[in-house]
Amino acid sequence: MQIIVASHSGFCFGVKRAINIAEKILKESRNTNNIYSLGPIIHNPQVVEGLSKRGLKVIKDITNIKKGAVIISSHGAPIEVMGDIKKKRLGLIDATCPFVKNTHNIGERLKASGYKIVIIGDKKHPEVKALLSLTGKGTKTKKVAVISQTTQSSDNYLKGVAELLKKDFSELRIFNTICNDTAERQASAKKFLKKCDVMVVVGGKNSANTRRLWQICKESGVSSYHIESASELKRQCFLGKSHAGVVSGASTPDSMVKKVVKRIKSLTS
Ligand code: F3S
Image (cartoon, rainbow, N blue to C red; front, side, top):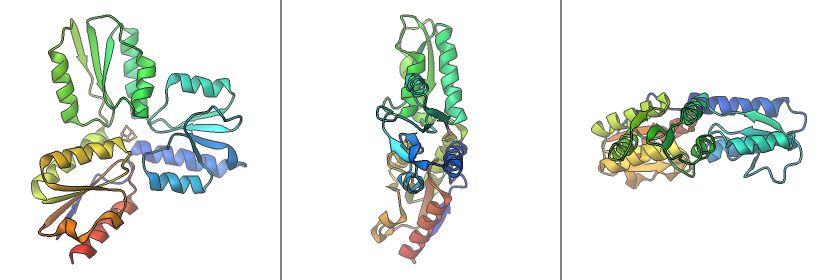
């Protein structure tokens, strides 16, 4: 079995930064009982579990939190939630990825300039929820601006823009807010799909960017597996196959990718 691994793997910049922020706080705090993360700090269950063993508590909301500090995940949080954290006089540690912040800033600026903002992304994802809190409900205007979730696939984005072009507007501004890391991982997957007869996508099942990689692979028709850990791979996955491609999401550690490669080797030798 020939195995090729995307050169762009391991944690992305924003994920590394968020983990470093959390680790630093846990190391420096005298009392780790009061350190919370609003939602998982990154979308990788194994990494989140590792941090929780060191004291980081994942919470859904701040209702029952009376003291301590709250870390905002790499995806950001709605402006109202940030306000509530401050009102309750809790510590606010913002680990939002700067590329996500950049999208938020673009959205806010466009809203202030009178545009109706269309976001192409997953409504339920924290990044989009945060963005919606800043760009608000649609205003009645024919000036439209479109931005995407940073981890959107370029194909989905283009499809969304093509739909918008059919609508009634006086002005349409299009911003490419897909982050470079996401774009490069998707490009690797597409390149591998031309050479491989089986693809392995490694990353959290709750990770938006990993799911997009999985979607790209699945839609190509090449046998593809989305796994969180190496043990999910079975010998049958590789029967009759000769070239395996391994791509990973932005919140997947390098060590996990190495374990997956080792597992493929052991199953196919
Ligand atoms: Fe940031 Fe892109 Fe990673 S938006 S969190 S660098 S996938």
